[in-house]
Image (cartoon, rainbow, N blue to C red; front, side, top):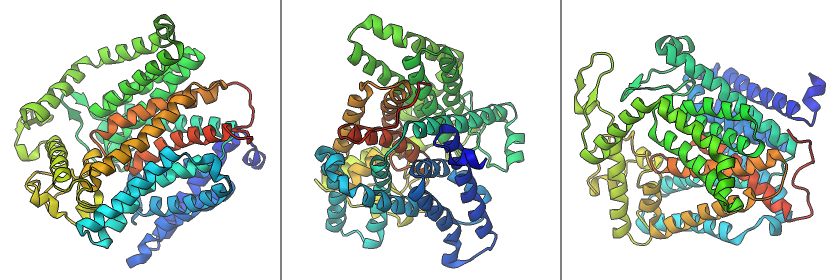
Amino acid sequence: MTRVFAESTARGFALRLTLLLAATVAVSWTIALGDFSGPLRNLAAGSVAVILALAYVWRPAEALLGTALFMLFSQTYALYLDAPIAPIDEVAVGLIFLIAGVRAAPSWRQWMWLPRDVAVLLVLVLAVISSLVAGVPISTWAVALVLLGKSIAFLYAVMWTPFREWEIRGGMWAVASVAAVVLVLGFVELIDARSFRDALGLNRYSSVRSGMPVVKSLFVHPAPFGWLMAFVAIFFYAGFAVTRRWRWLAVAVAFSIGPMISARRRAILGLLAGVAAGIVESFGRLHRPVAVIREWGPVAVSVLLVFVLFTPGLIGLYERAIDRYVTRDLSEVDPETGEVLPEGDADVSPQARIALYRGSVEIAADHIPLGGGLGRYASWMSRVNYSPLYERYGLSEIKGLEPDDTAFATDTFWPQILGEIGVLGLAAYLAFLGTIALALWREARRASGHMLRILRLGAGMVFAQAIVESLASSMFHSPPRVYLLYLALGVVLSLAWRSRTDEPAVEPAAEP
């Protein structure tokens, strides 16, 4: 085991990653047993952050993936750990960002790209100016600024980190292995949800949604489950397109069932968007419809077969979307009794989303061009310190946006950017994401071995998936998901700027 631990191989990477995650759980659990009170209750979270940051000093790739995976399941871990874990990513990302920044500083001319970096700077500067102009208390906007910037800081830390091909290989297979366990447990939950939840001590969630089974596996909500399954399926579809290995297509189809049994529309649409992005990239590279069909035809047929298999449930989800977004029919049938639930018991988050989108346009128009300030709209801090904008714009009486119930306030992303930073901030954020899209498009065409080609192609595909997710969730803020997404994107960006220098992007390795 000692020899494997020191190996510069995918196997050694997997062992070190496993031991790192085990250490974070063991140390934080031991500290939590102390039953501290007051500020000392944050010691468990702090210990995880410090372990991840120290690991980054010696093993950056393992530490970054460890951070992404720990945060992916952090809400589940919180069910078992009797201590707050919310500060983990803020502290861990902050420390890793500082270490990575110091190391990358001598190479700043190589990694700097003005369109991207100026766009990021504008987002942050406009956020501060907007908050000052709107008179938002510093105790509100300063915390909101950290929450806005922490995911971007993680992306930069990944981009500044060098990666070797065996680390990329080990990381990709580690994520696939974790997702496979989650998927298998999801099928177990599908068979007997109550026994599954009771055995693992997980929270209860509605088992049926418009005729579709709702599966969340090890998560506390089906949204991260559906997203992760689509995320991994997309990479396997990319793997098949690159290697033509039919077993990878079969695995991709298995993971594609995950978004269906999560019964989340955006996860299903995100999967479609990812596959569509792969087809667009293929057409842009090959320029011949016949060649594109040859490369992606089996994928398209496989996805179609999955959709045909779940046609009744998909029709139910479509009708549910029409009811909530068009006809505003919020009635819901109790799956156990068959009775129509009163409106107050229905899933009415679509109503909150519609109101948030509408309200963001009104706020942006009234506070043009800077918006209402950080922590004032559709963000976490607007829930912590209830925003007066909700009352001013008539949102305080909508379920999920009320002063004593703000559960749906963070169910969107773009209304937050527009409402808090205004049209200028929205333009800057769109420019930032646009530079990432452009970089991914360029990198997807770069000649490389199979593993790097899969990474580059898959990263562009999951970026398209994330754009779809962001329409109805705080995708680019959400700790359970954004770190794994930005890890994939950041590795590609890291390879991109190093390929323009004399520094080798990766160590050579044999094809998989």
